Image (cartoon, rainbow over all chains, first blue to last red; front, side):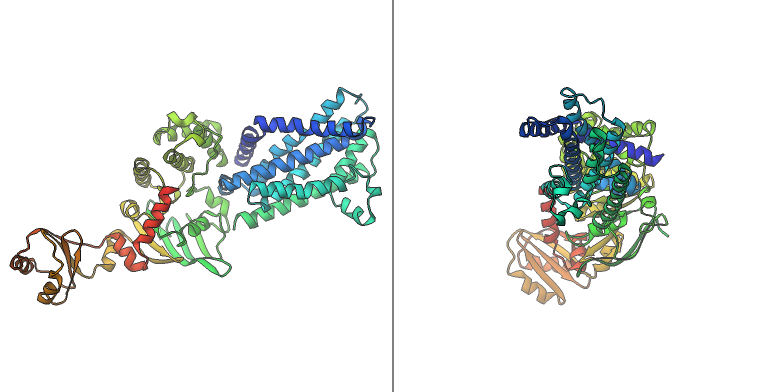
Length: 243
Length: 322
């Protein structure tokens, strides 16, 4: 019960202090909208339905990784993060509470292009249950990736630089812009080591019925990525933050 | 075993030894001060005691709980005030206290009255609804201490509690520390303010280069170095020429002239006043005042640690500017 009280209050504090701040809300809306418009302008005759999985994935990835890495690094530099480390709560509970806020923010980001698209095309054939699960899993893995970056960064600008170092190669290698089958042979195995590849593929299946990997395998891979990232982050927090 | 028990605690960073096998105990309800200059190992020791840093070797027990093995259980008994006020800038005072209470698993119906009570106790009731970022340094420090007390800890750790804050807030904080001691709270504090340590600590440990040089109550520390006698004479004129004659008359004494028309006569033996006064009279020097000089805690610190008090004063100035 005590852990639950701490978890809920950390989540509530983060949502109130960071995610519900006007600049972040506007970022959460403007960023996915910009991606959507950019893609529509780039290929005016393009099928919006085909663009949607990529737009959703990008919105979640950018929303979660940047927010968590920056907020944690910000709290670390102001030393308010020490309060969480010194509280009598398990580090796993604290980590879960910190990523919960950013996961919610990522989910909010994901549905901005969906709402935008719903005004332009019929989304009646979309499997929304699968879309939600895919978005949730992309948000979890991206948030944990953000946490991993936050553990390594000392300053906010470092966190932003590290985030881009991971995010942009991931965008180009996960099959969003270039199908994995068209990538040079040497890069294809790298694609299958990226959580976004599996998340995007589930979304393609749920929105267009065009997945290339069985959804169960994709979910399994995303779950494995989430577990691995959680354990590595937890170990790194223990090693780097409690010196 | 005391409320806090430290044995052979060591911390190294590569080749550098920050804390070098220190041991001490703090009894329940005692105020124990760690006095030393910046970089002496005070904060490194404190960080290990609160579980924010892992000892290279040694053992820390809080109320019998091994901090290394059961960190979270031990942390539940601690209240921690870091050297920098580290509450959340965007949140107001009341919300900050409630949030800290929630981290200790306190329910809403427990934490809200407790937060109100602490705001009142720390004279921050009016400021309770203002964001933390709008607080003055003294107010920030007081709210940080209130946050550490929100769950009524058995042991309170204070890292440089009055560094860089105004006189009135410092006084309030010192009074509050003494008040907590009366209620049975065990207190460990680090400071580089000698007067503060002298005024509020039951026992003091001098720390330099990661080692405890000595520890004890203030009278014990004074006694450990006062092996002589000294008398200061305040006179009516410049007396630069007198020391040599005075030393010749009173064998075994050492006389130094101070710039304020006074001289200090020191000796291993007790100094007989009448012959000295006669000497001054013969030399047509009027004596306005004669007082026995006892070593201050600062003198004791300098003598035992070999660290000049100017180093501590520089630290103090740095603290004041922070």
